[in-house]
Length: 220
Image 1 (cartoon, rainbow, N blue to C red):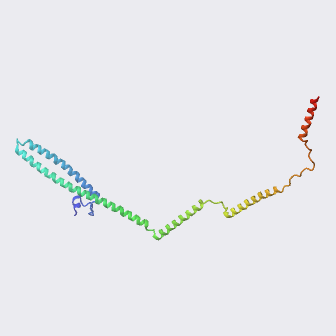
Image 2 (image 1 turned 120 degrees about the vertical axis):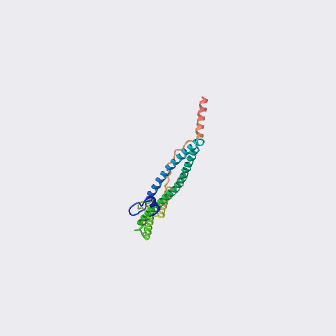
Image 3 (image 1 turned 90 degrees about the horizontal axis):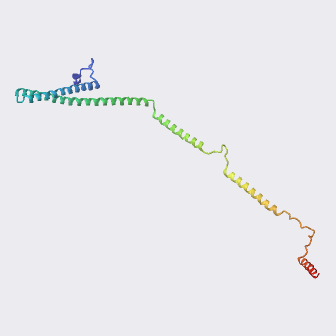
């Protein structure tokens, strides 16, 4: 029988050993029991020391007996300290082993779940799927580029042809302007009147007449 079986029992009819949690709980209970024993022994040591001091000069025999009991209690206390150290080390090792067991168990579950997830997957199918996704993304990008490109709503014209037509229109306007200028040069001027205009008396003759009238008036 293993040491666990000796300390904690067989754990069942089939001789199944205790679980890690059961063993850890038992070790903690043992630690608590030994800690209480420590407190008891420390109090007994203090009591025996006081008895020895009290009877040191009055009753040496009683004082010596108290010191002997004190030594026994101190020896038991030292043994309990060693036992507690061993139990504490064992409990920590068992807790670490239990933690590792749980970690490995969970990792095993995760590995099984991953295997089940990949069971129906084929790497070639995955490659084909990724290639198809990439192709569709490229098609979607091309569609987006076409949609965002400015269009004339079905009016597709040749820029060179439009420029040539515009030049022809400009030339026609220029020709019309030139023809208008030439037509203005051919317009006939008004004819000169055939009848002569009445002649205007010369200014000199008028002055002479005025002087003659003035002299005639002065002679009278």
